[in-house]
Length: 470
Image (cartoon, rainbow, N blue to C red):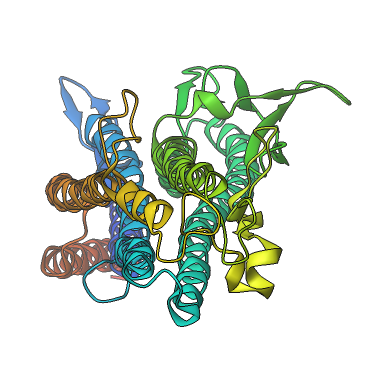
């Protein structure tokens, strides 16, 4: 039959449950601003009843567990969309840097420098014997070279930034991987006793999102142990249970940072090409794609200008009636490096060595000068030589502008998608201060009511004990 001390047990258990619930609500409030935190809830269960003849007497409530309010599908979606956002952010930033390197509207750009160079030959053709006109040709040639090299340096700086993004990203990845392995061990040790490691799982989920923002990852959870295994790309096993592997970087012959995975004590595997998403995937694609292609385009254009001018200049005669030599110094073995391009040393010392005439002892002959300035409109660029220098350069600048606009539009669209998914997560897993405050009042009242049960049971004991004194 029901006894007075059973009331004490009911009150004690009720106070314990209410206290745990209030502590959980306080924990939620304290972690409202913590990234990746999921709201926790106390599962209150009915304590097993006891038999009393034909009746079963209830014995109050007990703490069934504390669970986090979490939707794995939404978490996976945030992970995927976050990776796309990081990829697009990197692409947009690089596109803006490239566009600033080819800013033809606010600065004296390469297009203007090419026009001034060819126009100076046009002025020389009008006055072939003028040393002033020849000096202008030399100075504009140096200005054109400097402009090409400045653009090349800015492209190199974009490459360096992308390389730095890869190196920094690998360092961050290794830090996250170590922490995930430690969390695996901690989660296993906690959940082996049958409780859920809520905070540790929230932290691990956040680290998975951060890893996905950097590189392509795939992962799977062992339902028995609660540990997850993570693979980078297709072959780089980063986490296997409580063990963590490190990614490393190496520099290839083209000064590009590569991502390598250690297979053993001395063997490594280059897995750079396996990354297509995240910040590293975007940096790798841009660096090895549009940036590398653009550098080659600028180099090809500078080489073709120098080569075409040299071919025409070598056919003419200078102010001293000598056969013209090369106007620009470029290697003949095909190993052209834009950084080494310069005006021929003889012309730099004496502008009289610039060829303007087609034959010796012909004062006023401007044939070669006319040929060189007409090169501005000669179609020598492109796969089928369908572009002039101006048209080719303009088309490349236009491609960068279009790419930048598309990157900005895609980035804004992706930000909206990520915000929407995060809002959905917040509605499910986020902490509402009003709701938590309401629950704390509810649990406080329940705690007070349980305390009253104990006080009432105590008074009943006093009554029973006082019966003997009567």
